[in-house]
Image (cartoon, rainbow, N blue to C red; front, side, top):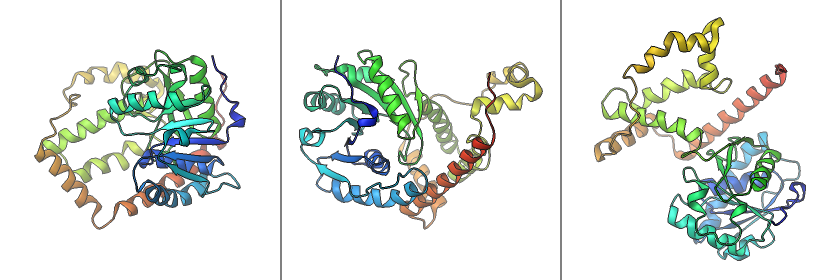
Length: 324
């Protein structure tokens, strides 16, 4: 098996795709002091990437930027072999098209140096199904699933496929951790991973409520931002319910409220995305945002995440974790 580069020796990273996720990764890698080579066949990829990095840079400067980080240390390439030449790690963020990813992974395997680990930002596909056409070194393909925007949200879910070597998964988890990410090293492949599974359940229920006229887009969003969402940065849904059980904790919660799980409150199946439902959701978002542009909302979101991350980091530092 080919030796992976030492994590401290990683200097150059390739980002495959310059869209919202790939460009966000590029900005983050730049802020962490790496040189970034970006592959994207679109003629305007460089323009779009520059705009994204410009928008992300102020937030990165607030939280995750290393001294001496070079905002201009990137290049865009349309030739895949040129883009990965001399790189120490690859982060793939191509569109969520299974056939496209299968072709791209086979091509990446053919042009990347054998020891280079290739991480995928896929939000739903498993590495087992994406790497079926990789003939040379399937053992170095790993899922490194981020959350948008990847330059600000710390979470990365890391898992391999049935042909991925454990050493590659461990290397990727160590690398993401070293660059400041909060890594979930998953034990096994799960469709949709962990966070997306939970997020999708909430999303489906929200669509049902809009379709049935039970709640507006604004009401749904406020029910989270001014409700349970305020608790989740400190304790996730499981610990939230543990606290809801009072001194008896989760045991009391399950014993007392367990029967309510049979209540027909939620609908886990997705509603049919009809034209009427689509238009209702779009209209609701336009009404909720008013005259604010997407750029305005991104800046507001980023400022909020920066403030919240600072607050939670301070609280964690001030509250020692009890040792078992």
